[in-house]
Amino acid sequence: MNIAFIGHGNVGGALVRALARHGHRIVIGVRDGGSASADALASQLDAVSVLPAAQAVAGSEMVFLATPFQAVEDALSGLPLAGRLLVDCTNPVGPGLTHGLDSRMSGSEQLQQLLPDAKVLKAFTVYGFENFDDNRYPGYGELRPGMFFCGDDAAAKSILAGLLQELGWEPVDCGGLDTALQLEHMTLLWIKMARLRGDGSRFTWARLRR
Ligand SMILES: NC(=O)c1ccc[n+]([C@@H]2O[C@H](COP(=O)([O-])OP(=O)(O)OC[C@H]3O[C@@H](n4cnc5c(N)ncnc54)[C@H](OP(=O)(O)O)[C@@H]3O)[C@@H](O)[C@H]2O)c1
Image 1 (cartoon, rainbow, N blue to C red):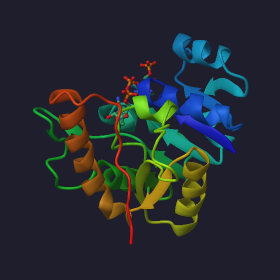
Image 2: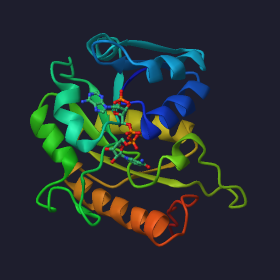
Image 3: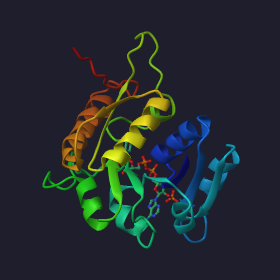
Image 4: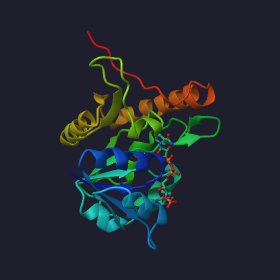
């Protein structure tokens, strides 16, 4: 798949590496003037290149958004996102580990309002970036770490679910984009456990069913 990235830091960089390992063609979209860190990342990996953001998005089937939440509007301004799958990896986190939009609405719904013609999906948010490049948890048999995701477009969700499976996750479809608010609160829980309480970043959640 041709995949564009807007944001290539902790989260974007980890996902670029994971997707490139699975044979996807990645284009990192950068701002005017280029980005030394994007060039450095691309130079380490086959099938990863760097282009101005609008060109990167124009040639892609799926776009990953991995900028700070506060930068989203600026980062996406003028990009040809109508009709495109947009995987929102951002989290609005406020002071004192509160929801950054005071839980009035999710960041993903706000993003969808900003880009009504894009197919917004939320994924790769509830865990730390350390789990995105390496999501192996040996010793659990067939059980895979769960990747909770949501979105309103059924076809887009099916493509994302296939990609998640390929990357070694169990895709856990949580519902429509209105569920993003709950996922953003799961993020706060994960951060509290991993980074504040000291459990460390090497854990995910999984789904058991009967
Ligand atoms: N860190 C985690 O474990 C984690 C896990 C899940 C989700 N998230 C969420 O994922 C997002 C990214 O987090 P991160 O830790 O990867 O952040 P990060 O390491 O600081 O990376 C942010 C990226 O966004 C780019 N960027 C910043 N402002 C931009 C703008 N105005 N236009 C275009 N690009 C811009 C940066 O480019 P430059 O370097 O060129 O400025 C950088 O590539 C956040 O919303 C965060 O809440 C984080």
